[in-house]
Image (cartoon, rainbow, N blue to C red; front, side, top):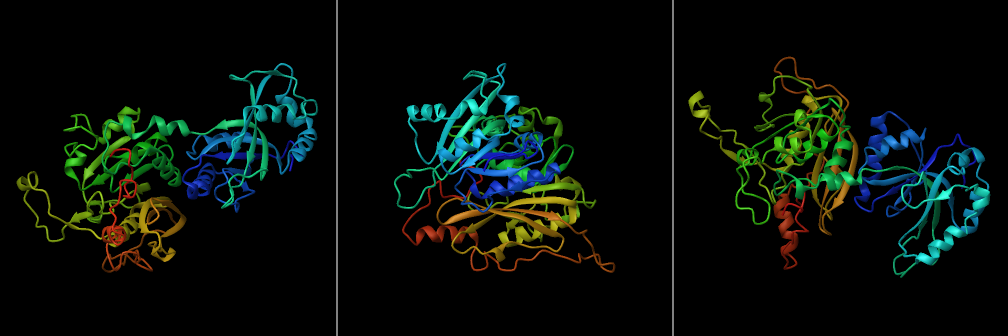
Length: 473
């Protein structure tokens, strides 16, 4: 395949090799957020292929997508997709001049980069690949400049890995294109937890936090709420996109920076450790509204309807952090007592957590607002019917993050499509959340989790424990 018209805008997206199941959901969410269109050529290709071919309205659209995504390394205007080098050279020789001339003139500088996936190519072979290109037919008349050239051309060779095969001899696909934009992979390092002021045992790592923010359509001036806010990692990612952020959590000590430190060899927390400090650290302090010590499942504490544009959260699984809620038998205290007494807490079943979360979202999300949350699973037992449903919420995406061969979690994205309604007589909700098939009916996730390992005479390692991040441990 070669481009035959300058009016056709076909691009090659080069993905980082991680979170494979999140690639298309994040891309589609960003495209929808930008209000543009996309055509995906090889959507059904095998998941491990890091290259995705898409049709976009313009180069500017590709740059906008790359300004948000955390999973795409770079984007290229695709000049050729080939199966053999002979086909590649023929395609490049027949490129229309109006496509190539703006980037190949004598006054410009350029470089050509050769990369391979699933195979190591010796430097001499890379040089030969470059020399074999049809330079004259392509009109490459500029000067070669390896550092900061005006234009960068890339030749990618994709070798499909087959089970039992040591190494493929011939590429499955060959791509040639012009670099148009770099992704936001550097943001993952900039926001990494090791450098963060305030972290906990379950602080979400930067990359996944940004993916969740993208799935939630987080943008400037939107109001984002995290009902299990913890140390506010998700709020940091949402504030990066200029949204106003707030949260709630039952852990008084953690929210006030008095809980046990999470960093190695740290005996006590610093006085400035707080969610606000995290936001100030990244120049987003003005977007932080508050974090309340509260049980969000108690809907009586909220007096207005449909106030949040995005609800984004990672509920406690009961492994590293206990799943608790305020006990229903708490007695009211007078104003003097409230200041000194914390309410009693009780166990909070994961099934109930998710039902309450969907009911909360149905009531307080704006129309077209999004709910994004994690759903932990035992992978061998998981079925699609395990995901909670609500008549007011539409399922947008369901992607898996494997944590081990036994345990994983699903990133669930839902959108509010129907207004919340109550009975005119007694004020009870007309719709409520349900779970078609309860994943935790016979045992809690904690019990299931440890049982899987004890059956084999094993104990889980840190890499197996479904925490939001292992960087903080």
